[in-house]
Image 1: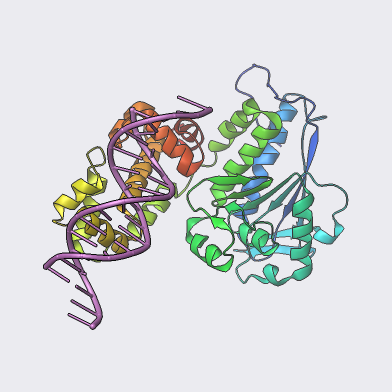
Image 2: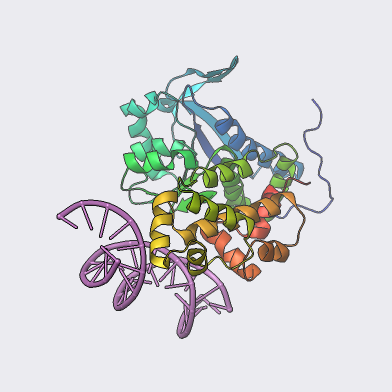
Length: 346
DNA sequence: ATATGGATCCGCCAAT
DNA sequence: CAATTGGCGGATCCAT
C-alpha cells in the first residue's frame, strides 16, 4: 500500500485540545440509500485519523468509527457495489460521542421501522452530537429529535420535509445548521463540510484545514453552482414582464435593484409590483435580488481568484462587510472561509 | 458589538 | 359585484 498522505510542510500540527481523546462515532446507514452520503463524510473522519497519525498523535486523538444498520447484512446494493454492515443498531453498547445519520432510503422503509426509529430517538438525545447528512434529517425528524429546532437538508426536499413535520423550522440555504447538539447538513457534499466543522470543534482549526486541503484534491465540489442556478431558474415567472425583470436583475447585479426602481421599469406601483412579483416568482423582490447576488458571489469565490472585495462590489454589495454578513446569514459561513473550502482552482 | 436610520414586507382598506 | 391595483402604517430586516 502506498503512503496515503505525505504532509507538505514540516510545521508541527497544532491541536487545540491535546487532551480531547479519541471519539467514538457511530455512523448509521440504511439499505437502498445513496452510499456517497455515508462514504464521503466518513472519509473526512478517516482522513483526520490519518493526519493525526502522521503527526504521531493517533494514540491519544482521533475517531473510532463504527457503521451500523437496521439489520446486519447488505446495506447498499447499487450499480453492482455492495456495502455490508457488520453490526446492527441493537449491538451498540456503551456511550457514543457522535451519532451520524446517513441519508434516507428510497422507499422509506427505515422510517417505518419503529424499533430502529425509537433507538435513534433515545440515542440521539443522549449523545454529545447527533448529525444528519441531507435526507438523514427525515430519520431525525421521525425520531422526534428535530421538534422545534432549526434544520436544513438539500433544497429539493426542504418543502416536503417541512410539510410532513410542521414543527421543524426548515431552512434550505445554509450549508449546515447546528441547533444545540443536533446538526443537519444540506447534501452529500455539505455533509463533508459538516464533518470538517466537527473536526474543527474537536481538534482545532489547523487540523480541519489540513484535512480540507487534503480532500479537495479529490473532491471538487460538484453541482453547487448548477444547484443554485436551478433554484433560481425554477422560479421563472409566467408573465413576460416579470421574467424580464428577473433577467434584468441577474444581468445588472451591481446596479440599483430597489423595489422602487424595479417597479418603475414595469410601470407598476411599488406595492403592486411587489405583489405580482411575489405571486409569479414565489419569493419577494428583495429576497430574489439577494439570492441572485449571493449566487454570483459564490460562483466568483469558487471559480475566480478575484479578491473578496472585488467580488463584493461586482455582485452589488456596497461593502465586503455587507457581503460577509449576507454569507453568514444565509450560508452560515464567511466568504473567505467559503473560498477556502470550495474554490475549485487549487 | 450595538444602535440607528432606511428599505422592505405585508395586512388592510380604498379606489379603479 | 368580483377582481385588480394603489396607498398607508406598523413590524421587521438590513446596512452603516
